[in-house]
Amino acid sequence: MLKINGKAILCTIILLISLLSCVKDVDFDQANDFSLTPALEASIVYTEVEASQFSLNGVEIEIIRDSIANIEIFEEQFVKDNLIRAEFIFEATNTIPRTFNLQVDFLNNTDELQHTVSFDALASSAGNEVVTEYIEIFEDDSLENLKLVTKMIITLTLYPSSDGSMLNENSSEKISLKSKGIFYFDIDV
Image (cartoon, rainbow, N blue to C red; front, side):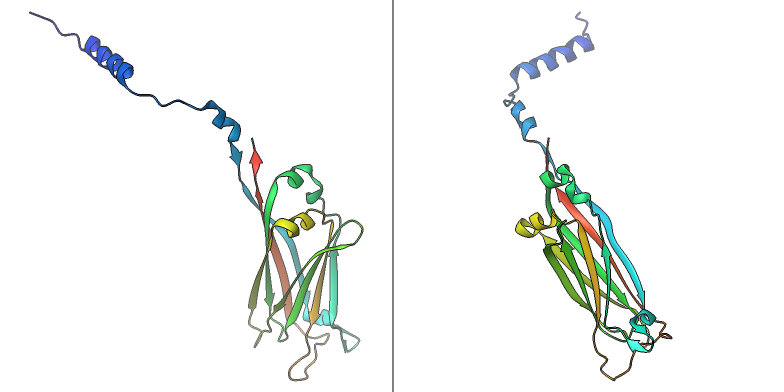
């Protein structure tokens, strides 16, 4: 009587399968074509302006400016070499009963204008928050211009009132602007 050894049969079956099975050629050069495409999100700007700041000695001020200097992110060689797209998402929240134009100018280190973003933040009614969102996409030439940016100037322009009312030192409403950037990279490994 034959004694059957289970381990021997299992090893024989595995050996036969491996000898008779087909194996597709493996292209080890594919490892050279590997790339990473991460997307990174970062906060860019946050500013808040009280309505009372649009009044000085009883006179309404139409324009308020702020600036951000020494933007160094685009000076990094890694960013210059690997950034393939950027999206800036701006969000204005307005409780002032007036419409504003928000403009962001992007300048290089010699103060040459590289790009401008402009949109209107709609007026509030009864002090309720009105949120306006605007998205600017940087690709191709606009992306190359963005990579030269070292400064940003933010300009808030107050549109005239439809009913003749004026903002004054006692106005308690506010407008805020916040933005974030989504940066898309293509990194060849």
